[in-house]
Length: 295
Image (tube, rainbow, N blue to C red; front, side, top):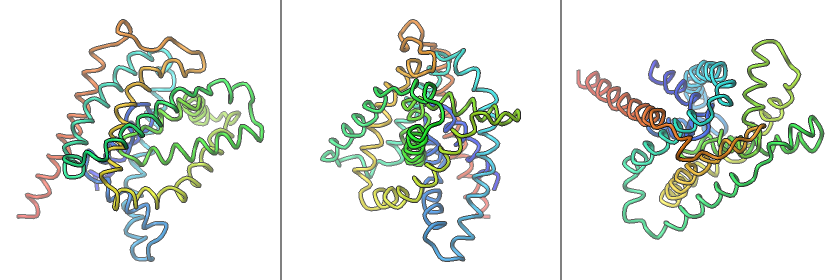
């Protein structure tokens, strides 16, 4: 139980920042397939299976909520004042995650080189989304039918990204110009300010619709076309390095893209160390569970 709650906590920290998706964290910690299956069962399973899936998701969701609120309270301001430090941290996350994903999916990747074009496809999709910067759209238009539809569509795409082990939903939020507004709105709500609550409302609508529309397809893709899916995910992960470097340009007050001069090696190493620690925790918990089973 504690492991699942901690997993949800770590997923929230990843989902709250551009670079690593919560799906990647679930993948590294070893409960990704259970996470996807539980979501799918909650929508399509029988009542007994739904209750079991719901128990798992409640534990995971509890940890996620705590982690998300902590991340918002700490990151909403620091993300703009320390953008290059945070971006360096996220680069470390992604670089350290790549070999772990490869190690976990050797069977689907090694020797399956005919699927390499899917890696280029995944990279191209993410780079295209990164190049699209709509940061001023929501800010300038405010609440309108067009903006509401735009935010709903963004929410649909973001939730699809968040459940995949590779592409960060926060990176997409940055591309759509909604990352800082969403984080700032959550922080405002924590202080009783509902002025921009409409942003979260329409994001949630998009997320709910996106779950219903995409989850079945994602599960089928991972179950029946895993090699193609893994190469697509690896392509997106590699391209997310570019998205992180360009991240400062997507802020409401754009900053120059990250350069060698604004790169922070200490934060990069910290990101790598965090992923290594998560992977160590995974193997430690597995050994502990194996020892209990043998006993």
